[in-house]
Image (cartoon, rainbow over all chains, first blue to last red; front, side):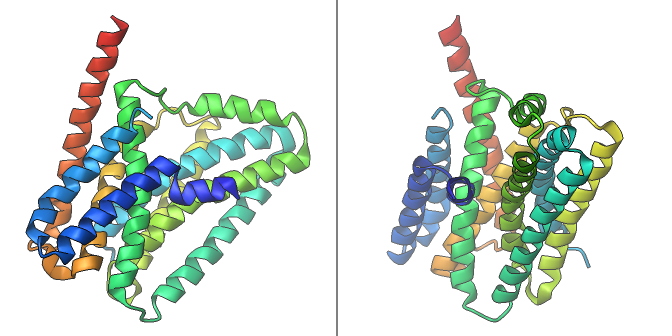
Length: 55
Length: 243
């Protein structure tokens, strides 16, 4: 079961990065900052990817 | 008609995963023979086919497309972020490049003639590598209505499987020459782009992206270039630390 879960979701750090990105998307879009989200979300996602890379 | 915006990422993702699965099956075949290894691989593929049929059928029943986009987008982010991070780490020299030859030798050494263990390793190998193919096939396949997207996605994944089997059968050795990290870099950037696009569209509707589908190209270019830049910076840091 472990390998199956890891294949679908990745490890805890991976899940944390994606959860943070999704929360950011949700907050920005639902607060009426959709245009800002277009720029901020890809940058935040990339920051998460770079944080994950050496770990 | 083939939808190339779906077929290309599906093909590339599937190619990477099938090569890994083929390497495992090949190693197992040397311990338990081709018949057992192929039987296990076919059982893994049959399980994946059932998963694809069931999930594709469920998605075609007309549930809220915004919710579907959001859920699939989250899965694509989970998958793509991991791939892109690994590709950057390998590019920077922080992790060794994926070595099919080493995986081949390791799998073969582990088995040493145990038929049941060999069969299970081949089955699990095909199933787990194929699960990633399934995720992308279903996720990208639901992008266009009417089943054309799913057909393009499944067709591309099957074409990648056929290509892997043909090349694998021809060389009958680990497929070391496939530049896996390059493909992983490109596919990781594409998958993260789809994930960003869909999660945001799922939350805010189509109006979120004023350039509609063209945004995918912009996002893809951004993630690819930013990934390369990050990989280069990390590589320079590693080299400085070594020197």
